[in-house]
Length: 127
Image (tube, rainbow, N blue to C red; front, side):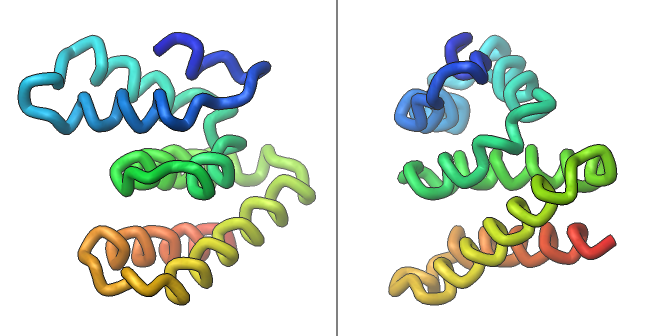
């Protein structure tokens, strides 16, 4: 799991999906996994993995984790990001909102939740 916190290497999205699935599995959830996910979510560079996770992950819970990490970044560190980083994040959020709306599986509850959370992030970006 620790390699997921090495931001000098490409993210192993499959491994991240595995860790998140383990967390949500009643038999697999452990304090260690929970602590790791909190650490990953709160890492100051996690927001840079947003597009990578959204494009490669097959697990909506992993995407929700990334949205939460990005939400923390936008709420508390937005003005410390460069203008280019802010624009890139805003554009990426808009891209994934449009992608979800065009998705044929859009009706699922998880997809609707993702869309609502992304729309909220877009609102946060305006402030």
